[in-house]
Amino acid sequence: MNAVDWDESLSVGDAHIDAQHKYMIQLAGTLAKALENGQANLVAHEALNALDAYTKQHFKDEEELMQRLGYVDLDLHRKKHASLLMDVQNLKGQMIARMPNIGEYVIKWVQKCLVPHILGADMRALKGVQAPQQDS
Image 1 (cartoon, rainbow, N blue to C red):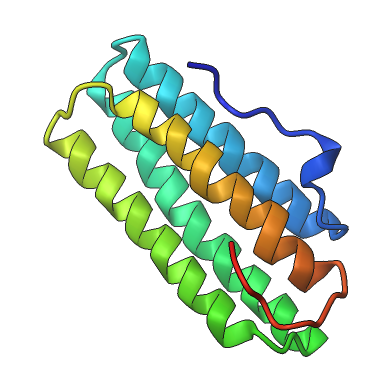
Image 2: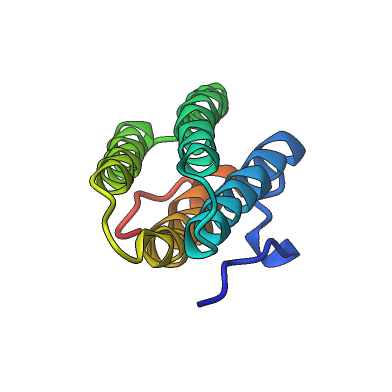
């Protein structure tokens, strides 16, 4: 299973937020690769802990930017961030429990949760579209 690679289609138009999104995707890919290659648990734990900490900081930064921009659906966006953070916590629990194929789950989370969030909710919020969110 291939990890997601960053490309310009994921750009929300803010250099700082784009750099954070890119780094989060890279961290998830590093974690998945470490787990799939049977690398030491320490490497996987460090990568997932870094993804967890970085995701929390990114969401804080992104929400502050949205607040400055006056984004009308900020409360809904915060709830979506909370759900994504819960996903990361669940991935950490699965890794600790030594769940088989955890690398695949990390890649699927990036593909099915993180990337759609960037392309949907983040794009609407940060590309200047202030209409209420319906999905993502």
